[in-house]
Amino acid sequence: MAAKIWPLLGTYQHQDWAVPLDRELLASIVGKAATDAFYGIADSQVQNIQLRTLLREPLRSADIRKRNAAIKWIVYDWGNIPPKAEQDEDRLFKMCAELNDYADADVKQFIVKHKIDRIASWSKVLAFADSDKYAIFDARVAMSLNALLDEVNFKRKFFMPPSISKPLNNIFGKIRNQVNADYEGKKLSYMGYLEYTSLLNSIVEQGLAPNILQAEMQLFAHGKKMGNKYARKYKMPIPYPEEEQGNLQFAS
Image 1 (tube, rainbow, N blue to C red):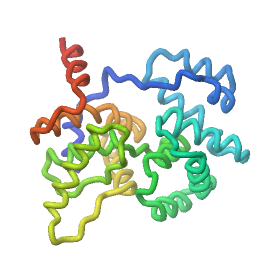
Image 2: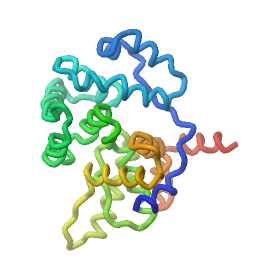
Image 3: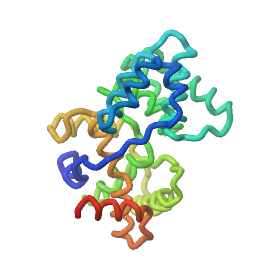
């Protein structure tokens, strides 16, 4: 499957990775000098990779306050996932405490236990704690994956986390309807994080991407493009018209 879908995604280019304007919380976690150096990196791809290095140690800290501060910055500040209430943060901190020191057995038990519950949040924590093994699974990644699977007529689809983007949620509704129709009268199950990491490992093992982080970034970077492509195929409104204009500019 990896060999079938990956060439359809497109290369990694012309991508930009937004970082929070407020440097204060990150500086309190990794230090002002490291934070200033990070913000001084002009290449956003290099900057994104460096960020994983910066926060790996705080996420493994024995100081629970430092560890939770790193989780908060990654999920809510950098990840742009708005907490519903202070209790929302507390529940995430409690969940992530189960990861302990990110030993393989603990992570596997965590994934099996929590399945899709807050997957877009805790997958960010895993991906920052060990980007050699784990990757972020969010709405844009799910969009790229499911659009690729649709292109090769693969009936199973990946779980789609709720998105802050209404147009993307509309497309997810269409995908769910298609899956329901394909599985009418049969047991329906969406693929989740274990299948996702298995696919990424296959992509790397086959030499289609140099590492899991690069594969993850490529999926995320093309989420809007793949959303538009899926929408055109099924005659839905284009969810990201600004992406279409950007592609025309890069091509000219």
